[in-house]
Length: 113
Length: 111
Image (spheres, each protein chain N blue to C red):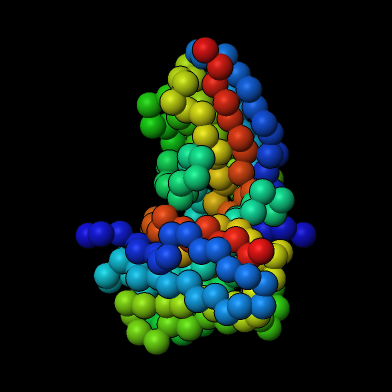
């Protein structure tokens, strides 16, 4: 298996632009997580899907952030409009079942200028 | 209050030293516990699960104290290759299957 695949790996955008991050979980995994990592705040859980349904989005910072999972093999995290404070590494992770290992993608390094 | 709290360090230790990391969690209903390792500019990867009875994997020993809501990781005979950030992870099933990560503890092993 190719593992969790995220795209793009790097994104540089101007403030105010829309940014879309993409994730393909490992086939057969039924839970998907989006995390944001910064030096100041560490790894923060943004939103969690189970069987394509958003279960907990309490970590989403504000309305500018939205996430979707239209099917079991694809999820997006969108920021509109983007701001410089959104600059971070965004990770996607998937889990097959309860009590098992979370596998991470390589992350998207977002820079908003 | 954060779900998982860790001392961020940094810990700078000489090769061969023994080093211990600690972590506390706030949800007493948490059911699964892990230590992840993250190398610079890489994604986190599972180092080891933490079992109630404590478990060992080579030079690494993990322990769980449910009464105190406390998890530890002990690294013996530190190697240069152990330099990384170690993340404490708690999986709470109360409202689903959520993995909460500590902010990580930075370790540098010095020659």
